[in-house]
Length: 283
Image 1: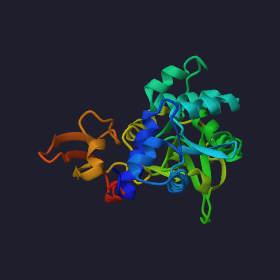
Image 2: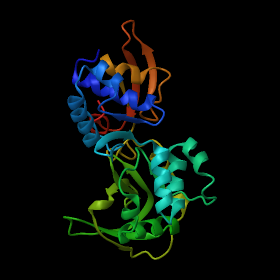
Image 3: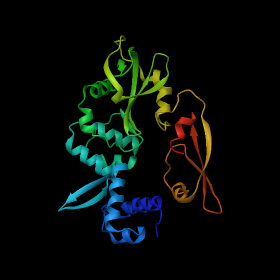
């Protein structure tokens, strides 16, 4: 029986994954029995989960609500149906999950290397792509153009930036760029006030950003630092979290390594980081 709220939430999330259609409702007998809740209480808990987790949506039908966990493929297919620029979505799948790439191959043969994602892009991609700034950044990445960006709250624009990729992480779109000091940095796209051509009119060579591009394969979030020696954090997963760090589970980070399972079931694992702020939210 699931007695604490955390136990109940974890159980419900597991049930979403177990169900063939990834759908639950407040009258589900298995949920009610295991969580020891009434349908009304279960409805409130499911509402709360839907509010907190973007990938859980509410479906209303005949005055009755059901809750569906959207899988990455559901999101991509839905976006493909409503977007006339499907090659961009194709590349998010290509960089983020090879299995999704294989599934989407039937939609397009074009390949571009502009996007990557570190969590599922639940923003309204179609609406966001319609914004002029987003279009300008896409063009700059494809054509390797230098750009000048003015951020909200900053008087001075950053000039002659080399745009590397548009990256979805932490629930937002970021631009990975190289500044005039050759440092790789991340700028949140929604914080950009203006994007225009840089004073350098020629295109830059990909070889000039090869080292910075390597960083993108190992970033965890916008706090990852460039040209800083990596450190290794040795962590222990306990209680209800330990099963998510077992040897056969998919890692949360590319640098995550299973070390050993203790006699009590706790799991010791390691991850690489460049500064504490990079992994503290995860811990």
